Image 1: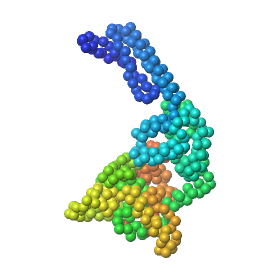
Image 2: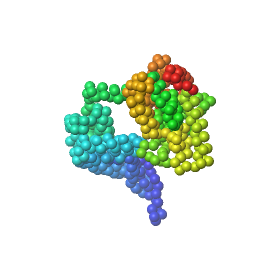
Image 3: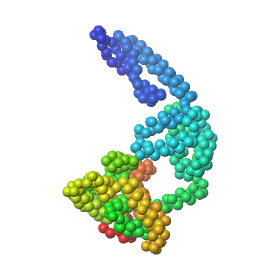
Image 4: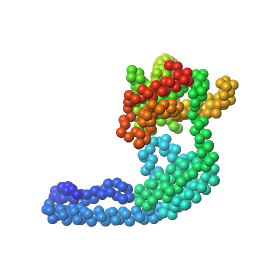
Length: 416
């Protein structure tokens, strides 16, 4: 409790005893006060008693209201309350993905069901019914279950429930689910021969920036959004490093509305040592960009966008995950038809931008001299047991990582 001196409109003075408390419904700090005139120890003690009684009464009333809310709370209202609060803590693209899952959850459990009536058995039955009705994959059900966990954890946090009925329910993968998941993952990853073929195909593309982007991603393990956010200011050619500080957000946006956001995790902000072939790729891009910018200043075009991004489309805008996927998709489809004739083997892979991140990690993990902590630090993974206590800047041991990537580059014929 603290005392504030106040003045009435008529000029007379009085004292205000003030104390704060946490509202059990909103978890926000609120202020409560009582007034008294005499500035004596007895008057202050009386004010403290009155203030405590007033706060106790408010809390009892609020807790009674909270119990009433919990008694009548429906799943639909709980879901919306959680979504409103959670949406303020995540990135827009994460929110868009979650909205899809929320719609699926709405098909799983009816909005008018009282939260207090939802049991683990009910959730188990709803999950089984949904999976049977929609023939959903194990991965889809995992995502739905994750959203359910978040919703009911929110209910526990706000004392609507004493425990989460979703936490004890497990989603089990069938043998076929496990096989299909493994096959999907394997289709995204390339061996050395497949990387060679992909590079040859990219060399035939009209815009060489896609080849240089691929080489940079193999050499660094960057996420495509991180690469899209890079400008010349992020590259230190003298020290042969790149500073990863942001991620380009472009999902469902027009080019003029692209914006830079934070990296996916706090560990994503880092400095990486660059192999020589990645440095060469960056230099080629910067040289082309200067020529392109100069040409369009002399001959302006409404279709061209001036951008500071290193990796650009033919129209000047940053290469995004969507535009890169389109190029890789065309290559995938062409190789499915022609790989046997051109290169002597069947193409079974589905290359996506994230494939190159996995290639980079696989190169490093195949070298027993490179510690796991160094790999996670280099690619910006956030794992407590391996990254706690480490900064996200480059350390001297990245030399081993660069050497390992250079050896792979030599193996697949990537030239500086």
